[in-house]
Length: 214
Image (cartoon, rainbow, N blue to C red):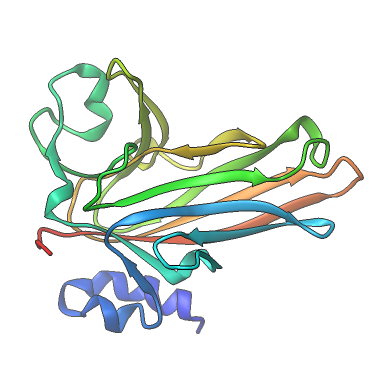
C-alpha cells in the first residue's frame, strides 16, 4: 500500500490520530507565502511542484510534502449576500485561507511563471480538481475589489472542476473549508506541447482546518 493510500484511509480516523504522525515528513505551514502549485519548464517537459517561500532560501518540494493549516484565525462567517451561497448557509462558520496575504495565515497560490511563451499550445495549462477527501466541501474562489466572488473550484456541486490557466500567471485565491478536519485535494495539470505530445500530472495538496489557536 502506498503512503498516499494509507493517508487517505487514515482520514476516517483523523480525530484520534495526531497530524504529525499521520503526515510524517510533511512541513506544516502556518503562515507565509507558498506557491502550492508551481508549474514550470524543465528541459523539454513540465514539472509540477510546490515552491515554498516560508524558508530561506526558498525551495521546490513535492506538493504532497506540505500541510497548510487554517487555524482559528481563519474562521469567519458566510456572508448574507446570495453570491456567497456556495460556501453554505448565511452565517455559518467557514475556514478561509485568504486571497490577500495575512501575516498569521498561509498565503497559498499557484504559478505558471516558469513556462516560456510558445512552449505550449495556446500558451496555457488545464488545472483540474478531481477529488476531495475530507470531512466537508472545499471551495476555491477569488474576490474582486468590490467583494464579488468568482468560484474556481467547488466540490459541493460535483467534481471534477477545471480551469484554464495562462502561462506567466502568479495567482492567489481563497481556499474555503466548511468543516474542521483534514483534507486531501487530488488535482491534475494537463497541457499540449507545441512541438508535439502532451503532459498529464496528478498530484495532491494537504490542508487542515482547526479550531486551535497557535
